[in-house]
Amino acid sequence: MSGRGRGFAPLELPARALDALGSGGGGPRTLALLRSARRSRNLLLLRGLRDRAGAARPEGASVKVAAQLADGLDLLRTVQAHAPAVFDEVMDDPMTGAWLGCWARGGPLAAPAAEAASLAAAAAHRAGLSFRIAVPVRSGAVMLPGLGLALPPGARDTAEVVGDGRRCRVESPGGAVTVVPGGGEDVDRDGWYGLRRLRLVADGRRWTFHLDSLNPFRVGHEPVAPRPLDAAEAAGWEAELGAAWRLLVDRHPARAAEVGQVVTSVVPLRGEDPAVDGKGGWLSATLGDAVGLVALAPHPGTRSLAVGLAHEVQHSKLCALLDLVDLLESPPGARCYSPWREEPRPPSALLQGAYAFMSVAAFWRDEAARTRPPSPAPPQAPAQDAPGPPATAAAAGDRDAPGGVSAEARFGHWYRQTRAAVAELDASDWPTAEGRRFLAAMRRTLDSWDGTAACPRELSRTMAGAAEHRVRWRLRHLPQPRPAVEILAAARTAGRPAPVAAAALLRAPGSLPPDRWELPAVPPPPETARTAAELERLLSVSDAGGPEQWATLAAAALVLADHRAPALAAMPELVRAVHTALGQPEPGTGARWSPLDLAQWLRPVMAAYPTA
Image (cartoon, rainbow, N blue to C red):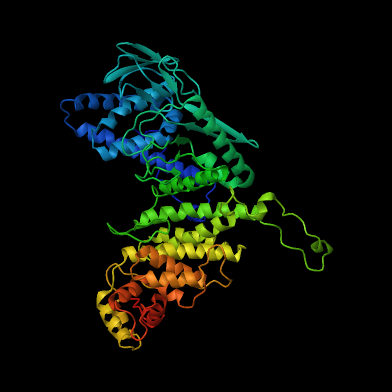
Protein backbone atom coordinates (compact mmCIF):
# COMPACT_ATOMS: atom_id res chain seq x y z
CA MET A 1 0.00 0.00 0.00
CA SER A 2 1.12 3.52 -0.59
CA GLY A 3 2.19 5.95 2.09
CA ARG A 4 2.01 9.04 -0.11
CA GLY A 5 0.61 12.03 1.70
CA ARG A 6 0.12 10.08 4.91
CA GLY A 7 3.07 11.61 6.78
CA PHE A 8 4.67 8.25 7.55
CA ALA A 9 7.69 8.45 9.86
CA PRO A 10 9.63 5.87 11.85
CA LEU A 11 7.91 5.02 15.12
CA GLU A 12 9.99 5.70 18.20
CA LEU A 13 9.42 4.23 21.63
CA PRO A 14 10.24 6.72 24.40
CA ALA A 15 12.19 5.29 27.34
CA ARG A 16 9.42 6.33 29.71
CA ALA A 17 6.92 4.32 27.63
CA LEU A 18 9.14 1.23 27.86
CA ASP A 19 9.35 1.73 31.62
CA ALA A 20 5.59 2.16 31.91
CA LEU A 21 4.97 -1.02 29.91
CA GLY A 22 7.54 -2.95 31.91
CA SER A 23 5.85 -1.92 35.14
CA GLY A 24 2.70 -3.63 33.85
CA GLY A 25 0.78 -0.59 32.65
CA GLY A 26 1.30 1.82 29.82
CA GLY A 27 -1.49 4.38 29.57
CA PRO A 28 -3.65 5.47 26.61
CA ARG A 29 -0.88 7.23 24.64
CA THR A 30 1.47 4.27 24.87
CA LEU A 31 -1.30 1.85 23.89
CA ALA A 32 -2.06 4.07 20.87
CA LEU A 33 1.62 3.86 19.92
CA LEU A 34 1.50 0.08 20.15
CA ARG A 35 -1.58 0.04 17.93
CA SER A 36 0.31 2.12 15.35
CA ALA A 37 3.23 -0.30 15.55
CA ARG A 38 1.01 -3.27 14.82
CA ARG A 39 -0.69 -1.40 11.97
CA SER A 40 2.75 -0.78 10.46
CA ARG A 41 3.59 -4.45 10.78
CA ASN A 42 0.38 -5.42 9.01
CA LEU A 43 1.09 -2.91 6.25
CA LEU A 44 4.55 -4.41 5.76
CA LEU A 45 3.07 -7.89 5.49
CA LEU A 46 0.50 -6.61 3.01
CA ARG A 47 3.27 -5.03 0.96
CA GLY A 48 5.20 -8.29 1.09
CA LEU A 49 2.13 -10.08 -0.20
CA ARG A 50 1.89 -7.63 -3.09
CA ASP A 51 5.60 -7.91 -3.94
CA ARG A 52 5.66 -11.70 -3.88
CA ALA A 53 2.52 -11.91 -5.97
CA GLY A 54 4.00 -9.51 -8.52
CA ALA A 55 7.13 -11.63 -8.84
CA ALA A 56 5.27 -14.96 -9.12
CA ARG A 57 4.37 -16.81 -12.31
CA PRO A 58 1.10 -18.53 -11.33
CA GLU A 59 -0.15 -21.62 -13.14
CA GLY A 60 -3.32 -23.69 -12.93
CA ALA A 61 -5.55 -23.05 -9.95
CA SER A 62 -3.20 -20.39 -8.57
CA VAL A 63 -4.11 -18.14 -11.52
CA LYS A 64 -7.51 -17.55 -9.89
CA VAL A 65 -5.87 -16.91 -6.52
CA ALA A 66 -3.48 -14.44 -8.13
CA ALA A 67 -6.32 -12.60 -9.86
CA GLN A 68 -8.38 -12.31 -6.68
CA LEU A 69 -5.30 -11.16 -4.79
CA ALA A 70 -4.45 -8.50 -7.38
CA ASP A 71 -8.00 -7.22 -7.53
CA GLY A 72 -8.22 -7.17 -3.76
CA LEU A 73 -5.01 -5.17 -3.36
CA ASP A 74 -6.16 -2.68 -6.02
CA LEU A 75 -9.48 -2.16 -4.23
CA LEU A 76 -7.72 -1.78 -0.87
CA ARG A 77 -5.55 0.90 -2.42
CA THR A 78 -8.71 2.71 -3.50
CA VAL A 79 -10.14 2.48 0.00
CA GLN A 80 -6.89 3.86 1.41
CA ALA A 81 -7.07 6.84 -0.96
CA HIS A 82 -10.76 7.69 -0.43
CA ALA A 83 -11.38 6.64 3.19
CA PRO A 84 -8.06 6.47 5.09
CA ALA A 85 -9.80 6.16 8.46
CA VAL A 86 -11.65 3.04 7.28
CA PHE A 87 -8.43 1.64 5.85
CA ASP A 88 -6.66 2.17 9.20
CA GLU A 89 -9.49 0.44 11.04
CA VAL A 90 -9.17 -2.53 8.68
CA MET A 91 -5.40 -2.69 9.25
CA ASP A 92 -5.95 -2.47 13.04
CA ASP A 93 -8.45 -5.34 13.06
CA PRO A 94 -6.96 -8.39 14.82
CA MET A 95 -8.48 -10.64 12.16
CA THR A 96 -6.47 -8.80 9.50
CA GLY A 97 -3.31 -9.62 11.42
CA ALA A 98 -4.40 -13.24 11.82
CA TRP A 99 -5.06 -13.54 8.07
CA LEU A 100 -1.75 -11.93 7.13
CA GLY A 101 0.12 -14.20 9.53
CA CYS A 102 -1.60 -17.27 8.11
CA TRP A 103 -0.71 -16.18 4.58
CA ALA A 104 2.91 -15.35 5.46
CA ARG A 105 3.50 -18.88 6.77
CA GLY A 106 1.76 -20.49 3.80
CA GLY A 107 3.78 -19.11 0.87
CA PRO A 108 3.50 -16.26 -1.63
CA LEU A 109 0.31 -17.47 -3.34
CA ALA A 110 -1.20 -19.75 -0.73
CA ALA A 111 -4.98 -20.01 -0.77
CA PRO A 112 -5.39 -17.54 2.15
CA ALA A 113 -3.91 -14.83 -0.09
CA ALA A 114 -7.12 -14.78 -2.12
CA GLU A 115 -8.94 -13.57 0.98
CA ALA A 116 -7.50 -10.12 0.17
CA ALA A 117 -10.50 -9.75 -2.14
CA SER A 118 -12.94 -10.45 0.70
CA LEU A 119 -11.13 -8.03 2.99
CA ALA A 120 -11.19 -5.36 0.29
CA ALA A 121 -14.89 -5.89 -0.42
CA ALA A 122 -15.78 -5.42 3.24
CA ALA A 123 -13.58 -2.32 3.46
CA ALA A 124 -15.03 -0.82 0.31
CA HIS A 125 -18.59 -1.29 1.56
CA ARG A 126 -17.72 0.34 4.87
CA ALA A 127 -16.10 3.21 2.92
CA GLY A 128 -19.27 3.75 0.86
CA LEU A 129 -17.62 2.94 -2.49
CA SER A 130 -19.14 1.43 -5.60
CA PHE A 131 -17.35 -1.74 -6.62
CA ARG A 132 -17.59 -5.27 -8.01
CA ILE A 133 -15.06 -7.93 -7.11
CA ALA A 134 -14.72 -11.72 -7.29
CA VAL A 135 -14.08 -13.34 -3.91
CA PRO A 136 -13.23 -16.90 -2.83
CA VAL A 137 -15.89 -19.25 -1.46
CA ARG A 138 -14.75 -21.43 1.43
CA SER A 139 -16.97 -24.38 2.39
CA GLY A 140 -19.93 -22.69 0.70
CA ALA A 141 -19.42 -19.42 2.58
CA VAL A 142 -18.02 -15.95 1.89
CA MET A 143 -16.57 -14.13 4.89
CA LEU A 144 -16.60 -10.34 4.77
CA PRO A 145 -14.32 -9.42 7.69
CA GLY A 146 -15.88 -7.03 10.15
CA LEU A 147 -19.33 -7.46 8.58
CA GLY A 148 -20.39 -11.08 8.59
CA LEU A 149 -20.78 -14.29 6.62
CA ALA A 150 -22.80 -14.94 3.46
CA LEU A 151 -24.01 -18.33 2.19
CA PRO A 152 -24.64 -17.56 -1.49
CA PRO A 153 -26.85 -20.26 -3.04
CA GLY A 154 -25.14 -22.48 -5.61
CA ALA A 155 -21.70 -20.92 -5.06
CA ARG A 156 -18.74 -23.24 -5.49
CA ASP A 157 -15.28 -21.66 -5.72
CA THR A 158 -16.07 -18.03 -6.47
CA ALA A 159 -18.78 -15.46 -5.84
CA GLU A 160 -19.03 -11.74 -6.58
CA VAL A 161 -19.52 -8.94 -4.08
CA VAL A 162 -21.23 -5.88 -5.53
CA GLY A 163 -21.66 -2.54 -3.78
CA ASP A 164 -23.27 0.71 -4.92
CA GLY A 165 -22.10 2.92 -2.07
CA ARG A 166 -25.11 2.14 0.12
CA ARG A 167 -26.13 -1.47 -0.39
CA CYS A 168 -24.01 -4.57 -0.82
CA ARG A 169 -24.82 -8.04 -2.18
CA VAL A 170 -22.99 -11.33 -2.55
CA GLU A 171 -23.97 -12.81 -5.90
CA SER A 172 -23.69 -16.39 -7.12
CA PRO A 173 -25.27 -18.50 -9.91
CA GLY A 174 -28.08 -19.49 -7.56
CA GLY A 175 -29.04 -16.01 -6.39
CA ALA A 176 -27.83 -13.17 -4.14
CA VAL A 177 -27.43 -12.56 -0.43
CA THR A 178 -27.92 -9.04 0.91
CA VAL A 179 -25.39 -7.74 3.44
CA VAL A 180 -27.42 -6.46 6.39
CA PRO A 181 -25.83 -3.35 7.91
CA GLY A 182 -25.37 -2.72 11.59
CA GLY A 183 -23.91 -4.63 14.50
CA GLY A 184 -25.57 -7.82 13.35
CA GLU A 185 -26.68 -11.01 14.94
CA ASP A 186 -25.28 -14.25 13.61
CA VAL A 187 -28.69 -15.68 12.83
CA ASP A 188 -29.68 -16.70 9.31
CA ARG A 189 -31.29 -13.79 7.45
CA ASP A 190 -31.79 -15.21 3.99
CA GLY A 191 -28.25 -16.54 3.93
CA TRP A 192 -26.60 -13.67 5.84
CA TYR A 193 -25.01 -14.08 9.30
CA GLY A 194 -24.06 -10.68 10.68
CA LEU A 195 -21.03 -10.41 12.92
CA ARG A 196 -22.12 -9.71 16.48
CA ARG A 197 -20.90 -6.42 17.92
CA LEU A 198 -21.31 -6.12 21.68
CA ARG A 199 -21.37 -2.86 23.60
CA LEU A 200 -20.94 -3.39 27.33
CA VAL A 201 -21.39 -0.46 29.70
CA ALA A 202 -20.55 -0.30 33.41
CA ASP A 203 -20.52 2.90 35.46
CA GLY A 204 -20.33 4.91 32.26
CA ARG A 205 -17.31 2.98 30.91
CA ARG A 206 -17.87 1.32 27.54
CA TRP A 207 -16.21 -1.70 25.97
CA THR A 208 -17.11 -2.39 22.33
CA PHE A 209 -15.90 -5.50 20.51
CA HIS A 210 -16.87 -8.23 18.05
CA LEU A 211 -17.96 -11.63 19.34
CA ASP A 212 -16.56 -13.55 16.41
CA SER A 213 -17.20 -17.23 15.77
CA LEU A 214 -17.32 -16.76 11.99
CA ASN A 215 -13.94 -15.61 10.69
CA PRO A 216 -11.90 -18.55 9.32
CA PHE A 217 -8.66 -17.13 10.80
CA ARG A 218 -10.01 -16.61 14.33
CA VAL A 219 -7.80 -19.27 15.95
CA GLY A 220 -4.74 -18.81 13.74
CA HIS A 221 -2.63 -21.57 12.23
CA GLU A 222 -5.03 -22.94 9.59
CA PRO A 223 -8.45 -21.61 8.52
CA VAL A 224 -11.38 -23.18 10.36
CA ALA A 225 -15.06 -23.48 9.53
CA PRO A 226 -17.52 -20.84 10.79
CA ARG A 227 -19.61 -21.74 13.80
CA PRO A 228 -22.53 -19.35 14.27
CA LEU A 229 -23.69 -18.96 17.85
CA ASP A 230 -27.29 -19.67 18.65
CA ALA A 231 -29.28 -17.11 20.62
CA ALA A 232 -28.76 -18.82 23.97
CA GLU A 233 -24.99 -19.08 23.50
CA ALA A 234 -24.69 -15.47 22.47
CA ALA A 235 -26.80 -14.29 25.40
CA GLY A 236 -24.70 -16.38 27.76
CA TRP A 237 -21.45 -14.90 26.51
CA GLU A 238 -22.83 -11.37 26.68
CA ALA A 239 -23.99 -11.92 30.28
CA GLU A 240 -20.68 -13.44 31.40
CA LEU A 241 -18.52 -10.86 29.67
CA GLY A 242 -20.78 -8.12 31.02
CA ALA A 243 -20.30 -9.38 34.57
CA ALA A 244 -16.52 -9.55 34.10
CA TRP A 245 -16.51 -6.02 32.65
CA ARG A 246 -18.48 -4.68 35.62
CA LEU A 247 -16.05 -6.33 38.03
CA LEU A 248 -13.05 -4.82 36.25
CA VAL A 249 -14.58 -1.35 36.10
CA ASP A 250 -15.61 -1.46 39.75
CA ARG A 251 -12.54 -3.06 41.30
CA HIS A 252 -9.73 -2.84 38.74
CA PRO A 253 -10.35 0.38 36.76
CA ALA A 254 -6.83 0.62 35.30
CA ARG A 255 -7.09 -2.91 33.91
CA ALA A 256 -10.59 -2.19 32.64
CA ALA A 257 -9.24 0.81 30.72
CA GLU A 258 -6.67 -1.40 29.01
CA VAL A 259 -9.19 -4.12 28.18
CA GLY A 260 -11.51 -1.51 26.70
CA GLN A 261 -8.76 0.02 24.58
CA VAL A 262 -6.94 -3.14 23.48
CA VAL A 263 -9.50 -5.96 23.10
CA THR A 264 -11.60 -5.51 19.98
CA SER A 265 -12.38 -9.15 19.18
CA VAL A 266 -13.44 -12.01 21.44
CA VAL A 267 -13.50 -15.51 20.00
CA PRO A 268 -15.75 -17.90 21.96
CA LEU A 269 -14.41 -21.45 22.04
CA ARG A 270 -16.13 -24.77 22.55
CA GLY A 271 -14.58 -28.03 23.65
CA GLU A 272 -14.37 -29.26 20.06
CA ASP A 273 -12.57 -26.14 18.84
CA PRO A 274 -8.85 -26.55 18.17
CA ALA A 275 -6.75 -25.33 21.08
CA VAL A 276 -5.01 -22.12 20.15
CA ASP A 277 -1.62 -23.37 21.36
CA GLY A 278 -2.17 -26.93 20.15
CA LYS A 279 -2.78 -28.23 23.67
CA GLY A 280 -5.74 -28.35 26.00
CA GLY A 281 -6.07 -26.98 29.47
CA TRP A 282 -6.06 -23.22 28.79
CA LEU A 283 -9.16 -21.11 29.33
CA SER A 284 -7.91 -18.12 27.33
CA ALA A 285 -5.32 -17.41 24.66
CA THR A 286 -3.88 -14.68 22.47
CA LEU A 287 -2.59 -15.01 18.91
CA GLY A 288 0.74 -13.31 18.29
CA ASP A 289 -0.47 -12.25 14.84
CA ALA A 290 -3.76 -10.85 16.15
CA VAL A 291 -3.12 -8.12 18.69
CA GLY A 292 -6.44 -7.27 20.35
CA LEU A 293 -8.00 -10.71 19.90
CA VAL A 294 -8.78 -12.88 22.92
CA ALA A 295 -9.94 -16.48 22.51
CA LEU A 296 -12.00 -17.64 25.49
CA ALA A 297 -13.31 -20.98 26.63
CA PRO A 298 -16.13 -20.99 29.20
CA HIS A 299 -14.77 -19.87 32.57
CA PRO A 300 -15.79 -21.20 35.99
CA GLY A 301 -16.64 -17.78 37.42
CA THR A 302 -16.68 -14.03 36.92
CA ARG A 303 -13.33 -13.38 38.57
CA SER A 304 -11.72 -16.12 36.51
CA LEU A 305 -13.00 -14.50 33.32
CA ALA A 306 -11.97 -11.01 34.45
CA VAL A 307 -8.42 -12.07 35.28
CA GLY A 308 -8.27 -13.99 32.00
CA LEU A 309 -9.01 -10.79 30.10
CA ALA A 310 -6.39 -8.88 32.08
CA HIS A 311 -3.86 -11.65 31.39
CA GLU A 312 -4.45 -11.72 27.63
CA VAL A 313 -4.25 -7.94 27.31
CA GLN A 314 -0.65 -8.18 28.49
CA HIS A 315 0.14 -10.69 25.77
CA SER A 316 -1.29 -8.34 23.14
CA LYS A 317 0.69 -5.40 24.52
CA LEU A 318 3.94 -7.35 24.51
CA CYS A 319 3.37 -8.71 21.00
CA ALA A 320 2.88 -5.15 19.72
CA LEU A 321 5.88 -3.89 21.70
CA LEU A 322 8.05 -6.49 19.99
CA ASP A 323 7.10 -4.91 16.66
CA LEU A 324 9.06 -1.86 17.85
CA VAL A 325 12.00 -3.24 19.81
CA ASP A 326 13.85 -6.50 20.46
CA LEU A 327 13.89 -7.38 24.13
CA LEU A 328 15.72 -10.72 23.85
CA GLU A 329 18.39 -12.11 21.56
CA SER A 330 18.67 -15.84 22.20
CA PRO A 331 20.30 -18.43 19.94
CA PRO A 332 18.10 -20.82 17.94
CA GLY A 333 16.97 -23.74 20.06
CA ALA A 334 17.57 -21.99 23.39
CA ARG A 335 15.34 -23.35 26.14
CA CYS A 336 14.85 -22.56 29.81
CA TYR A 337 12.76 -23.30 32.89
CA SER A 338 9.20 -22.01 32.95
CA PRO A 339 7.34 -22.08 36.30
CA TRP A 340 3.99 -22.76 34.60
CA ARG A 341 4.99 -25.43 32.10
CA GLU A 342 6.39 -28.94 32.45
CA GLU A 343 8.65 -28.72 29.40
CA PRO A 344 11.57 -26.36 28.71
CA ARG A 345 10.40 -23.24 26.90
CA PRO A 346 11.97 -20.71 24.50
CA PRO A 347 13.14 -17.53 26.28
CA SER A 348 10.58 -15.49 24.32
CA ALA A 349 7.77 -17.66 25.70
CA LEU A 350 9.11 -17.24 29.24
CA LEU A 351 9.08 -13.46 28.83
CA GLN A 352 5.51 -13.59 27.51
CA GLY A 353 4.42 -15.70 30.45
CA ALA A 354 6.20 -13.57 33.04
CA TYR A 355 4.64 -10.38 31.72
CA ALA A 356 1.13 -11.80 31.55
CA PHE A 357 1.26 -13.57 34.90
CA MET A 358 2.58 -10.44 36.60
CA SER A 359 -0.80 -8.93 35.72
CA VAL A 360 -2.53 -11.99 37.16
CA ALA A 361 -0.58 -11.57 40.40
CA ALA A 362 -1.55 -7.88 40.49
CA PHE A 363 -5.21 -8.77 40.00
CA TRP A 364 -5.24 -11.24 42.88
CA ARG A 365 -3.22 -8.88 45.08
CA ASP A 366 -5.92 -6.26 44.67
CA GLU A 367 -8.65 -8.84 45.22
CA ALA A 368 -6.96 -10.04 48.41
CA ALA A 369 -6.67 -6.47 49.69
CA ARG A 370 -10.41 -5.94 49.16
CA THR A 371 -11.42 -9.06 51.05
CA ARG A 372 -8.78 -9.10 53.80
CA PRO A 373 -10.28 -8.29 57.21
CA PRO A 374 -9.18 -4.92 58.54
CA SER A 375 -6.20 -4.87 60.89
CA PRO A 376 -7.22 -5.39 64.51
CA ALA A 377 -7.54 -2.34 66.67
CA PRO A 378 -4.92 -1.71 69.37
CA PRO A 379 -5.37 -3.95 72.43
CA GLN A 380 -6.58 -1.11 74.64
CA ALA A 381 -9.47 -0.27 72.29
CA PRO A 382 -12.79 -1.30 73.87
CA ALA A 383 -14.19 -2.47 70.54
CA GLN A 384 -11.55 -5.17 70.37
CA ASP A 385 -13.20 -6.97 73.30
CA ALA A 386 -16.37 -7.60 71.35
CA PRO A 387 -16.12 -10.28 68.66
CA GLY A 388 -17.90 -9.67 65.40
CA PRO A 389 -18.29 -11.03 61.87
CA PRO A 390 -15.62 -10.45 59.20
CA ALA A 391 -15.86 -7.27 57.18
CA THR A 392 -17.37 -9.16 54.25
CA ALA A 393 -18.69 -12.63 53.72
CA ALA A 394 -15.66 -13.36 51.55
CA ALA A 395 -13.17 -12.11 54.11
CA ALA A 396 -13.10 -15.42 55.94
CA GLY A 397 -11.72 -17.25 52.94
CA ASP A 398 -12.37 -15.32 49.74
CA ARG A 399 -13.16 -18.49 47.79
CA ASP A 400 -14.65 -18.42 44.32
CA ALA A 401 -16.52 -21.54 45.36
CA PRO A 402 -16.62 -23.84 48.37
CA GLY A 403 -13.25 -25.52 48.67
CA GLY A 404 -11.68 -22.99 46.29
CA VAL A 405 -8.37 -21.20 46.65
CA SER A 406 -8.21 -17.80 48.32
CA ALA A 407 -7.22 -14.64 46.48
CA GLU A 408 -4.29 -14.36 48.88
CA ALA A 409 -3.03 -17.81 47.90
CA ARG A 410 -3.50 -17.06 44.20
CA PHE A 411 -1.47 -13.88 44.56
CA GLY A 412 1.30 -15.74 46.37
CA HIS A 413 1.37 -18.45 43.72
CA TRP A 414 1.63 -16.14 40.70
CA TYR A 415 3.90 -13.67 42.46
CA ARG A 416 6.43 -16.38 43.27
CA GLN A 417 6.26 -17.85 39.78
CA THR A 418 6.64 -14.46 38.08
CA ARG A 419 9.61 -13.64 40.31
CA ALA A 420 11.24 -16.94 39.32
CA ALA A 421 10.71 -16.24 35.61
CA VAL A 422 12.13 -12.71 35.81
CA ALA A 423 15.13 -14.02 37.75
CA GLU A 424 15.69 -16.70 35.09
CA LEU A 425 15.74 -14.09 32.33
CA ASP A 426 17.81 -11.65 34.37
CA ALA A 427 20.49 -14.27 35.01
CA SER A 428 20.84 -15.05 31.29
CA ASP A 429 22.72 -13.20 28.57
CA TRP A 430 19.61 -13.07 26.34
CA PRO A 431 18.17 -9.61 27.19
CA THR A 432 19.12 -6.67 24.97
CA ALA A 433 19.72 -3.25 26.52
CA GLU A 434 16.02 -2.50 26.10
CA GLY A 435 15.21 -5.94 27.50
CA ARG A 436 17.28 -5.22 30.61
CA ARG A 437 15.40 -1.98 31.09
CA PHE A 438 12.05 -3.72 30.61
CA LEU A 439 12.96 -6.46 33.11
CA ALA A 440 14.17 -3.85 35.59
CA ALA A 441 10.77 -2.16 35.42
CA MET A 442 9.07 -5.52 36.00
CA ARG A 443 11.36 -6.18 38.93
CA ARG A 444 10.54 -2.80 40.50
CA THR A 445 6.85 -3.65 40.39
CA LEU A 446 7.49 -7.05 41.96
CA ASP A 447 9.75 -5.47 44.60
CA SER A 448 6.96 -3.08 45.54
CA TRP A 449 4.83 -6.10 46.44
CA ASP A 450 7.41 -7.62 48.80
CA GLY A 451 5.68 -6.14 51.82
CA THR A 452 2.23 -7.40 50.83
CA ALA A 453 0.70 -8.97 53.90
CA ALA A 454 0.04 -12.65 53.46
CA CYS A 455 -1.01 -15.49 55.69
CA PRO A 456 2.13 -17.49 56.65
CA ARG A 457 0.34 -20.73 55.89
CA GLU A 458 -0.51 -19.49 52.41
CA LEU A 459 3.13 -18.55 51.87
CA SER A 460 4.19 -22.01 52.99
CA ARG A 461 1.69 -23.63 50.63
CA THR A 462 2.80 -21.61 47.59
CA MET A 463 6.45 -22.26 48.41
CA ALA A 464 5.77 -26.00 48.53
CA GLY A 465 3.99 -25.93 45.18
CA ALA A 466 6.80 -23.97 43.57
CA ALA A 467 9.41 -26.31 44.98
CA GLU A 468 7.58 -29.42 43.81
CA HIS A 469 7.32 -28.07 40.26
CA ARG A 470 10.95 -26.91 40.13
CA VAL A 471 12.35 -30.18 41.54
CA ARG A 472 10.27 -32.24 39.15
CA TRP A 473 11.43 -30.12 36.21
CA ARG A 474 15.10 -30.40 37.15
CA LEU A 475 14.83 -34.16 37.50
CA ARG A 476 13.16 -34.53 34.11
CA HIS A 477 15.28 -32.17 32.04
CA LEU A 478 18.76 -31.64 33.51
CA PRO A 479 21.67 -33.98 32.78
CA GLN A 480 23.08 -36.26 35.46
CA PRO A 481 26.72 -35.35 36.26
CA ARG A 482 27.99 -38.92 35.87
CA PRO A 483 31.75 -38.32 36.42
CA ALA A 484 31.05 -36.58 39.72
CA VAL A 485 28.47 -39.21 40.72
CA GLU A 486 31.00 -42.06 40.67
CA ILE A 487 33.44 -40.17 42.89
CA LEU A 488 30.73 -39.09 45.30
CA ALA A 489 29.13 -42.52 45.56
CA ALA A 490 32.51 -44.09 46.33
CA ALA A 491 33.21 -41.53 49.05
CA ARG A 492 29.79 -42.03 50.63
CA THR A 493 30.15 -45.81 50.63
CA ALA A 494 33.55 -45.47 52.32
CA GLY A 495 32.10 -43.20 54.97
CA ARG A 496 34.23 -40.21 53.99
CA PRO A 497 33.14 -36.56 53.78
CA ALA A 498 31.87 -35.42 50.41
CA PRO A 499 34.88 -34.47 48.27
CA VAL A 500 34.39 -30.81 47.45
CA ALA A 501 36.76 -31.15 44.49
CA ALA A 502 34.04 -33.12 42.70
CA ALA A 503 32.11 -29.85 42.29
CA ALA A 504 34.39 -29.01 39.36
CA LEU A 505 32.74 -31.89 37.46
CA LEU A 506 29.16 -30.68 38.00
CA ARG A 507 29.16 -27.96 35.36
CA ALA A 508 28.30 -29.38 31.94
CA PRO A 509 26.20 -28.44 28.88
CA GLY A 510 22.60 -28.13 30.01
CA SER A 511 23.40 -28.06 33.73
CA LEU A 512 22.20 -25.38 36.12
CA PRO A 513 23.62 -24.11 39.43
CA PRO A 514 21.89 -25.19 42.65
CA ASP A 515 18.69 -23.42 43.60
CA ARG A 516 18.32 -21.63 46.92
CA TRP A 517 15.42 -22.42 49.20
CA GLU A 518 14.53 -21.09 52.63
CA LEU A 519 12.59 -22.94 55.28
CA PRO A 520 9.21 -21.54 56.32
CA ALA A 521 9.18 -19.68 59.60
CA VAL A 522 5.82 -21.06 60.73
CA PRO A 523 4.50 -24.50 61.63
CA PRO A 524 3.28 -26.49 58.65
CA PRO A 525 -0.38 -26.04 57.73
CA PRO A 526 -2.24 -29.14 58.86
CA GLU A 527 -4.10 -29.55 55.58
CA THR A 528 -0.93 -29.80 53.48
CA ALA A 529 1.97 -30.84 55.73
CA ARG A 530 3.10 -34.45 55.74
CA THR A 531 3.29 -36.14 59.10
CA ALA A 532 6.54 -37.74 60.20
CA ALA A 533 5.11 -41.16 59.41
CA GLU A 534 4.14 -40.10 55.88
CA LEU A 535 7.60 -38.68 55.33
CA GLU A 536 9.20 -41.95 56.39
CA ARG A 537 6.95 -43.81 53.97
CA LEU A 538 8.09 -41.55 51.15
CA LEU A 539 11.70 -42.20 52.09
CA SER A 540 11.20 -45.94 51.94
CA VAL A 541 9.96 -45.92 48.35
CA SER A 542 11.94 -43.00 46.96
CA ASP A 543 14.62 -45.18 45.35
CA ALA A 544 12.02 -46.81 43.13
CA GLY A 545 10.10 -43.59 42.57
CA GLY A 546 10.26 -41.21 39.63
CA PRO A 547 10.52 -37.42 39.52
CA GLU A 548 7.02 -37.04 40.97
CA GLN A 549 7.87 -38.93 44.17
CA TRP A 550 11.17 -37.11 44.62
CA ALA A 551 9.49 -33.75 44.05
CA THR A 552 6.77 -34.58 46.57
CA LEU A 553 9.42 -35.59 49.09
CA ALA A 554 11.36 -32.35 48.65
CA ALA A 555 8.23 -30.18 48.96
CA ALA A 556 6.99 -32.12 52.00
CA ALA A 557 10.35 -31.79 53.74
CA LEU A 558 10.42 -28.06 53.08
CA VAL A 559 6.93 -27.63 54.50
CA LEU A 560 8.00 -29.58 57.59
CA ALA A 561 11.01 -27.21 57.93
CA ASP A 562 13.41 -30.16 57.78
CA HIS A 563 16.89 -28.63 57.80
CA ARG A 564 18.03 -31.08 55.10
CA ALA A 565 15.29 -30.10 52.67
CA PRO A 566 16.94 -27.06 51.03
CA ALA A 567 19.87 -29.23 49.96
CA LEU A 568 17.58 -31.83 48.39
CA ALA A 569 15.57 -29.18 46.53
CA ALA A 570 18.72 -27.30 45.48
CA MET A 571 20.12 -29.92 43.11
CA PRO A 572 17.82 -32.96 43.12
CA GLU A 573 19.31 -34.42 39.92
CA LEU A 574 22.65 -34.82 41.71
CA VAL A 575 21.13 -36.30 44.88
CA ARG A 576 19.03 -38.78 42.93
CA ALA A 577 21.93 -39.81 40.69
CA VAL A 578 24.20 -40.50 43.68
CA HIS A 579 21.34 -42.26 45.49
CA THR A 580 20.81 -44.54 42.49
CA ALA A 581 24.54 -45.21 42.18
CA LEU A 582 24.73 -46.28 45.83
CA GLY A 583 22.05 -48.88 45.19
CA GLN A 584 22.47 -51.22 48.15
CA PRO A 585 21.30 -50.48 51.71
CA GLU A 586 23.49 -48.28 53.84
CA PRO A 587 26.16 -50.36 55.61
CA GLY A 588 25.37 -51.20 59.20
CA THR A 589 21.72 -50.13 58.97
CA GLY A 590 20.04 -52.49 56.53
CA ALA A 591 17.97 -49.52 55.36
CA ARG A 592 18.07 -47.57 52.14
CA TRP A 593 20.16 -44.45 52.01
CA SER A 594 18.06 -41.52 53.15
CA PRO A 595 17.73 -38.98 50.30
CA LEU A 596 17.57 -36.17 52.83
CA ASP A 597 20.70 -37.33 54.70
CA LEU A 598 22.45 -37.78 51.38
CA ALA A 599 21.44 -34.28 50.27
CA GLN A 600 22.81 -32.82 53.49
CA TRP A 601 26.07 -34.73 52.97
CA LEU A 602 26.31 -33.28 49.44
CA ARG A 603 25.67 -29.69 50.54
CA PRO A 604 29.40 -28.66 50.54
CA VAL A 605 29.77 -29.95 46.99
CA MET A 606 26.74 -27.97 45.80
CA ALA A 607 28.04 -24.85 47.55
CA ALA A 608 31.25 -25.15 45.51
CA TYR A 609 29.43 -25.35 42.15
CA PRO A 610 31.61 -23.46 39.66
CA THR A 611 29.95 -20.22 38.61
CA ALA A 612 32.20 -19.50 35.66
